[in-house]
Image 1 (cartoon, helix red, strand yellow):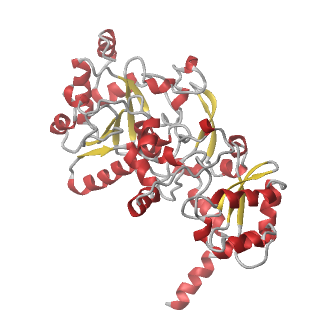
Image 2 (spheres, rainbow, N blue to C red):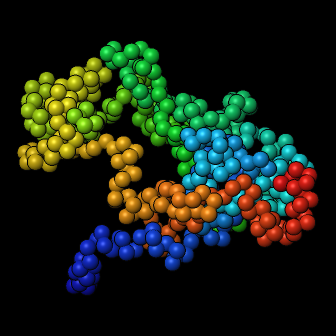
Length: 445
């Protein structure tokens, strides 16, 4: 047995690991392989909410037949773009979240529109919606009504405050910044109050980049749907899934909540510090910003050796001293006296040249331009350039998890409003052109 294992190891090692990984997980070969979710039908009724749009786009990447249902005039999410409202009809704002989806229109505020939805639900596995709690129920197309039509329906409802609890009936809108703020992450982000060298108006809670609260919530929603699909495979039963984006944000902020529970103290804004480890932060360089990590005592020793400051490890010998809010900025300023006189590459090279005890890690902080220009991401399909019949040449982010057997893929980037009305309504419900014209004249689609 041992000899056989040794031979297997020898055979495997004849091919370098990176070559094997590329051969088996190359996203550019995805079209030759099966799709894991090719028999799953998803109805996406998200309205002005990227959490739902992101959740369904993840499912669509892996083969689910996602039917995006918008009001006849299009979803407001198509206007949420830095490119300007003139592009609202093309939907460039959500071109990534619209990938691989079929786009149809349907007016749920009409009884005939709701009846059409019921017909679609009969043939669906999953429904995603982002309306306020009770709204779909009031229309007669909530989960309790629809599961009578389709007991196997997985119904995922996403709302900031959740569908039960004291705030569920607040009737407040679901906004990304609300999700970040209520999840606690906005409070911990930004310039600390103790940094008096910054003007007071700059030392305030700060939201993170675009739609992060929605994306994190949408990621958990997609995971929840996958769990429900797995359960349905064995039982045939659908279920209701209640997702609150702030709860998702609170989960990824991890130790801030635990710290308050244990210490009954709030970790205030920490800028680029990490309240669990230090030094593990961003530092000023001559040509931008760099990342430096040397938080354990032995690695802090390495850092102080590299920058020629043994006095720092003598004054702050353990991580306990370095982690106090009073000492964070002091230690950082002393480190930056060395880093600010060197380029990013000089800082990185100094850490690589160090041969003493412990390890200090450094890296560049890239601008979006630098990220865009990195060959590594293009070769891995992390960034893709696609020529689309509706949008022309566009660059989009690729599929993140690269599966060996059932890889995700980009089949198309998005569709204009109602582009697939004729195809979907005919294929799923048997509607002909006359029926579609009738529904359109009534404002149903």
